[in-house]
Image (cartoon, rainbow, N blue to C red; front, top):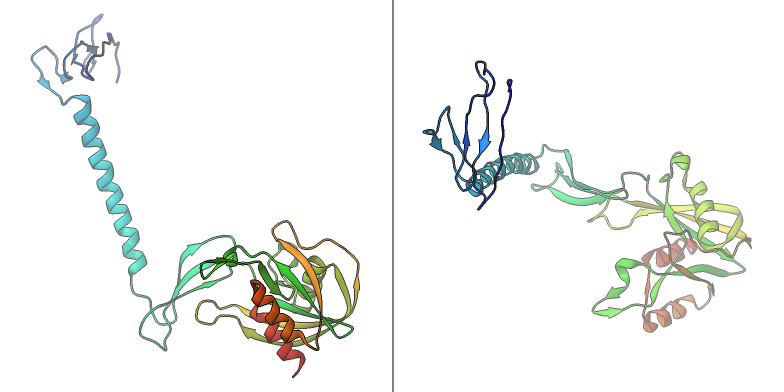
Length: 271
């Protein structure tokens, strides 16, 4: 607004009165405001103007308008989310750094399928390290499996494993290259020879992840560091292949969870 303003302010019970009072030769459209104690705001060029709602009512009206806008906005968003998918179409429902929850309309079934996928990796690798007829296994704390069937677990027994191409400087790596990295990071071993064993889906009803298995031989321990800062690897086990099934059963009885990749890796070694 243009012009010169004369404003006197007094507050009581969240109410004001506003009226216009000329100051120093007012020009057209000049508005001069003064707030009087104890009255609701009113607008006009003199004391006979109509009264506006008090502050509480104004805030209430503003809140209603804001909620109405948010309701419309959320409704539009939900409408987009529940819109039917075309055959073969995928929609991302939620995304984090490591996982995406997706909805996919397969041309082979009549309803959408919810699954998770990695937005940064090209699958995973499992290393099957063998040294002197012993299988190298790791014991690791896995947050999702710290409690199982109402009981605390001691940890997870598994083979060294990790994602393929999930680091910015290793996006083009293959399974063998990823196997070298994961073996050293999680066990402290280096291997002179690697053999590709095969691949398979880990949980085809919940994820599109495919794991590739690589055998590592001629091992040498070069580091005592186990895992990265984001991992909780407790111990490395060297288990004789002869009698390994009995050893795994004992660990289960002690309260450990056996990663299915251990059984898959053993099966591929014996094929």
